[in-house]
Amino acid sequence: MARSDDAAQPSLLVRIQSGDTAAVMEAYEQHVGSLYRYVRLRVVQAELAEDIVSEVFVTLLDCVGQPCAPKQHLRGWLFKIARTQLYEHGNARLTLAWDALEDWMPTLIETNPEHTLGDVIDRQRLQHALQMLNSDHREVLLLRFGHQFSLQETADALDKTVSSVKSIQFRALQNLRQIMKPDEAGVAADNPEEDQQPQKGGALWNSRS
Image 1 (cartoon, one colour):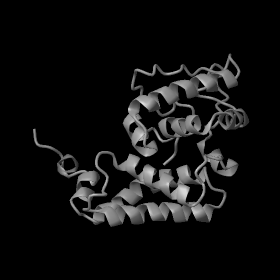
Image 2 (image 1 turned 60 degrees about the horizontal axis):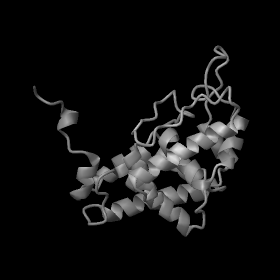
Image 3 (image 1 turned 135 degrees about the horizontal axis):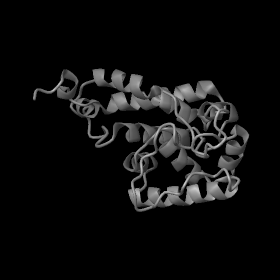
Image 4 (image 1 turned 90 degrees about the vertical axis):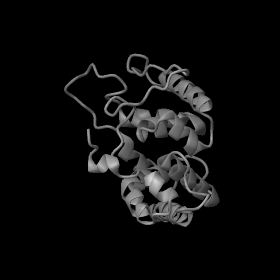
């Protein structure tokens, strides 16, 4: 069976590795929104967040066709560069700017009171619960459930091993359950040995492109 035109096209990652600078604009269009939301959670000024995201793609452009180009996961590489830029700007800690965090909160669904934490959650309570988690726990949850990252992408972005990410996610979900009211903490802590993919609509919150 003949492949579709899209399937026959080389991936953005391969094109970037091979020196195709036009692929950077496509990568920008695909990832700028999620990168901005990620950075915005750490900085108070929207302008600074925009500058940092711009620096990420300047770095990507500089690495096109070079040894510093992403090797396996483009998205994880972009987020890793964003974290590096945040460190350089003195915003290493995940401070959760509250106005930016609003974009992560799901819309409350009033038609079904039986929804669990994965479907319905009070915004203020989730904000409070996230703030009580340590920085590593918050960041893994944001990447895994906010950005729908795989375990490998999360490991790439945080410069950790997959095993470490599994362990952090397991503990983070356990701690979040303890903070939330027992009757509403309907998120089962993931088995640290399984690569369970967060599903849109069933995660802690929904990410928007």
